Amino acid sequence: MSTTAVDYARENHPRFLNELKDLLRIPSISTLPEHAGDCRKAAQKLADELRRIGMENVRLIETSGHPLVYADWLHAVGKPTVLTYGHYDVQPADPLEEWHTPPFEPTERNGNLYARGAVDDKGQMYMHVKALESLLKTNGALPLNVRVLLEGEEEVGGEGIAAYVASKPSDLNADFALVSDTELFAPGLPTLCVGLRGMIYTELEVRGAKTDLHSGIYGGAAPNPFVALAQIIARLKDESGRILIPGFYDDIIPPSAEELAAWKSLPFDEEEYRRTEVGSKELVGEPGLSVLERTWARPTLDVHGMPGGFIGAGAKTVIPARAIAKISMRLVPAMTPAKAFAQYKEYVEEITPSGVEVQVRLIHQGDPCLIPVDNPYIHAATRALHEVWGKDTVFIRGGGSIPIVGDFAKHLGLPSVMMGFGLPDDNLHAPNEKFHLKNFELGIRSIIRFLEEAGR
Ligand code: BES
Ligand code: MN
Ligand code: MN
Image 1 (cartoon, rainbow, N blue to C red):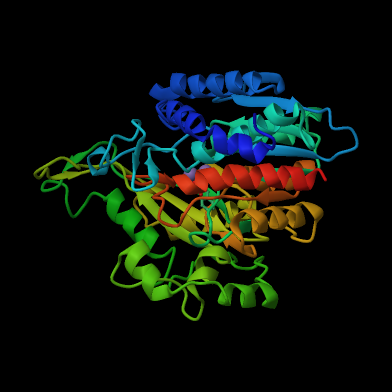
Image 2: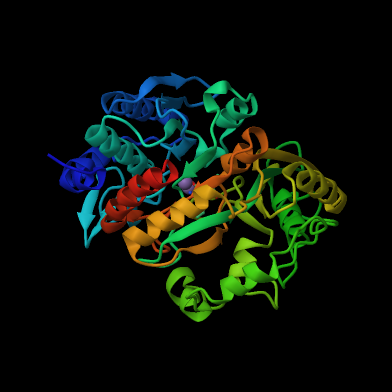
């Protein structure tokens, strides 16, 4: 019989891991319509588990896309309320041939669990569920009030949860949010993430001729949409990495001197990062700024793909009638998606070469966020982390985006504690995604202790 929740988690760890593997076997890829059933299956499985461990009011909340999962336990009179958040959807697994074991057959290897979603975010989300189970099963009660909110569309922009949160339902009344969807800065180093970049994800569609044309017969007279797109893209960003959209940098609030000084003292070597994490010949980006500044505190612009035209093996001499480019921009405080998109659209329309027409579409968007660190929940988190990891917590920002964190602040007034346990080499969104098993274990322990401290 376990005496503490931490003991319970230790004793039940093998079962926790097996349950996580079952969840990882469900290919809940939110962006692929053929996996909508799998997304619902994952949501249903989580709802069943939340019910089994003793959470109340468990239900699926329907959205315009994949369902949300809600649960609560609200019997800690006089204690604060935490809203725990995670996402059960995952990125597509391609290219499949690069996986050493299949993405939806979770496999343990060298102290890691390999599977799509292992760390982003099923494994991390499941740490919350198992921490709640450990607390409920040992004490018959939780140390504070808990609401659980899980989504299935984080990887595609989170439209459903954004609408739900913006409607300010009383079901989300809380004092702070707990999000485990970020990383440790280095192995064994307890980390809280206090800022994220926002984003706008867009598509440019360029149209030239009314139909695909023979490039010999018409080449020299008919406009080529791919060339036009290349010309547009070449004017979006210069060689030093500076974005050329007029006004794009106007609203940026630079990091404080204290924050910059703290980043300088983090264990980070740019050359090592280039070699081991990026693997390119050189790094790029704005001169005079460190990698951490460039990836955490500066906006950026990237091209993700250019569908259209002929991409089969061999050669086909065609002038495609249309071409698309998928382009996103990461935003930093206090840029807003609406203003950034308006500036981008106006500029693209202005620089589009004559002879073609361009359509600028917004696919999804999310606000950047920066979290104030001087609150009792962050303090409780650093106490818990020190106890479990034996070290002082480092505060970092992340270059990635979790759109709902900004919405929690904006619509619900909630500060978030972003306590994540991924590692920099966990291959998020890439082949051979993994979760370090020790981090799954210590993550559950950290969350148990954090919830206890936050309810003290
Ligand atoms: N968990 C990540 C974001 C993340 C990873 C933040 C590591 C900080 C450190 C999240 O699942 C993600 O991938 N978000 C997308 C959001 C987008 C599709 C709206 C991203 O950042 O590309
Ligand atoms: Mn994630
Ligand atoms: Mn992700």
